[in-house]
Image 1 (cartoon, one colour):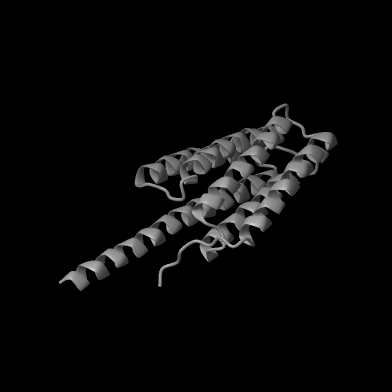
Image 2 (cartoon, rainbow, N blue to C red):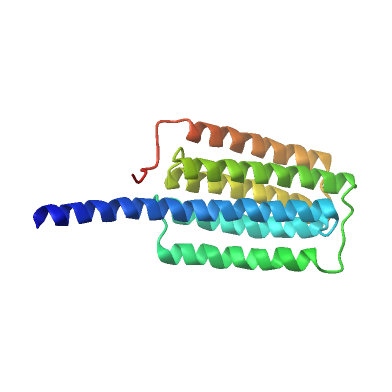
Length: 198
């Protein structure tokens, strides 16, 4: 009887670790998908630079929420629901902005700069997601990296708020992206790993 209780407790703990990892993986996957949709909207001309900047500001809020909620290494059901509500709101705005009358010029220098910056977001979000899924990143580390993504998103939102991104603004954003890229690499290659389920 006692062995059964111990085995049940161990199984529940392992499933708990897996559920927390799955939550972080689900949220980081959605970050990547939504950045891809913003990038595609810019490339097709469905999104203007100003619209993309506004969406990046919303992405900043989602990343900040994820950073706050994952800083203790796990996501509660309530925290997960809050992040999903925020992501649903951004998703609806991406759809709305992609289907309104406002159009962008994907060949303009400003749009090209924003496209490059958002493409880097896609790549970095995908690297975070891959690290969470593989166990190279703990949820706590992923939360720290989401805080870094929020800083990058804020810089992009600020740069494009007036409808154009200048070369100097892009250089500052790229500096933040380079810093974030190094942080992702370092956290994925340190000795911390997320517990895995058998």
